[in-house]
Image 1 (tube, rainbow, N blue to C red):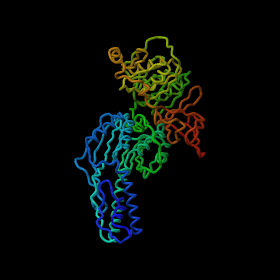
Image 2: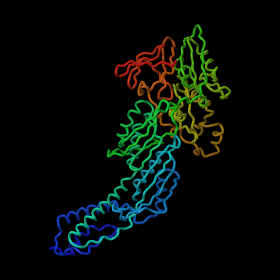
Image 3: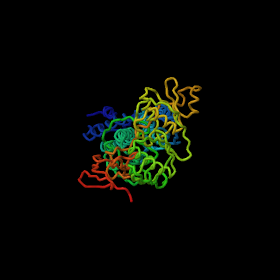
Length: 578
């Protein structure tokens, strides 16, 4: 025989932080049945699990305190200013039968803008907050090449206390009430679990893994949206391989792909992927800069990005040994081909844009340069020829003996800071630039002194350099005159800290598929044929017999074009358009 008071004590495991249930009457002569004992055990286990989650849920809402905490996390992540907007009232959550629970959810939105590495850190800190801050939806979108914007909607649960539950009546009624209470406790635990399962950390880990795996691959993100358990990713792939491996790479990063939609964007493809986070564990990986996010479409993905200047035809001469057939080549590509054929050095003005056709058969270099100049291009006679638009003034270099080590440089639309960082390493100097400087260079140089090359490039960009206290400052003439009057650290940063991390997404020849290549030029010098093709790279890709591609090999180059052999043994040709 179990007394009423002992039975009440045995069932007190039902109590929650919100208040203990009250047992009015239990049959005094009835022993607990196995069913009642099982129900009691299940309710107790749910209580323990719920209590673990309830530790992270406050009993009242401190809007000012939460806002201050979020702002502190933003400062810790070096995020800059954030905007926090909260709703005036909360939403009471309900059991499946429509009865109110002790949970009330308040929502607020947090938005801001910075490089993805800082947004990433902020979101990780929020997801690991001691107070449960559930991620209801999240949008990360590129604002510029260096910055993303984000908008986060948080659900903040408050556990205000549960109403008392009264048990009474005969054993059958008591057991039915216990079953009802079990269902309520199960529903409460599921609500708590759902809120606790909404942190962004798993998604952020997936984005970190994607960056690590795809940083040097031809894939860019433009937007990521998380809502209702779905993750939508939008972006751009360059080349066959990146598109073909997209779903596999997402799976490796813990994202189960439900659908993939693609469409053409010049020689590239945009994609829209819908996915869910899988159970696959992925490591937390640090993020640098703007990660995989980019705002601008890479040049190789644009159609007719530069104006067409016309057709240039060089005259044949008796001792001419240069033959070039170049179709719809960008000006930078034209001088890349000439550099490869002749060894001449060129620096191309970053503001000069245009495309042309070039035809030369048994021509001399001088005749080819004059033909190019006829479509609206100015080419100097310097050792490093400077290519500009007519009427553009470039400061002439002083005559001096260049003493730097010889360098070879083939750069199309390269971040100047990358070059300055490399030169600083060669000279053992820290090279400082203006924080806001964003200069791209195009230069093709072979075996000339590094100080000569750097001086030519800086002159073309209307910049100069000054050595002050063992540091090399690079900027405009007016900026350099202020160095002595200002704190030298104000507005100046190390070029190595601001350089672009390689030509991300641009592919080597061996990473191209045959279908990625578009033949741009065929050229002959000293009886040897050379070919250049446009692909997923800033400059042209040189093709010669024996070169390996992702899915084939170059067999030969001649006046007809480029003959290739695919990995499955099929012959293929790259030819110039008619």
